[in-house]
Image 1: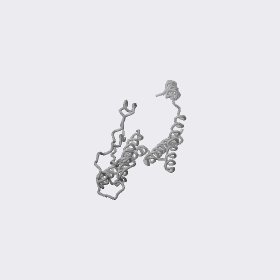
Image 2: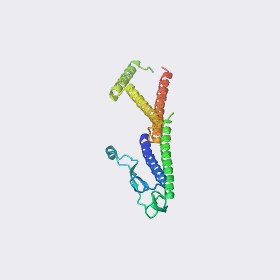
Image 3: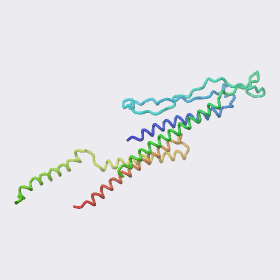
Length: 139
Length: 103
């Protein structure tokens, strides 16, 4: 029984969800960032994950694959404009552009990622329990 | 009714000789000795333990990217150690069974 494979699959899922939590933290941290050094407004990021591309050997054997982070995508949301004339980053009309981050959807992403992470931990725990049960055979 | 012992003996000897030949032939036929296999398996267990140790050291030094990889390395090491312990238990049981055997 190759329990290392199920460990690796669960670990890949955990890595993806951890990246998702990190990215959500980045979005929330930049919720009131006005302008970066190059003058652009921060755009909320999203993790694009997919089933990991098979290695050559895995392709031959039809091995099971985990998940992987494919890319980080910037959302095309319009910046939120706030009228703050005295602000250093205000434009000529007195508007400051804040990132178009939706705190509700960010919290939803955060919770979903944590729950899926927990599910991965449960799957790994079950695989480990199975392996330990197997060791009890005949003993 | 008389049993003829002379006619009874030769087949027994033949079977014994054949059995001995089979036992002697087995290690050569399998092509693998138990000693090297045991050493190799223990080496793998040790390798897992060393890897878990390095992962924990990396965690303490703040070099680890993912906490779960450390925990998974620890679990792998624990499982392979448990497997080795179970193999040892079975071997010891078999050995004691042989020792208890009445000749």
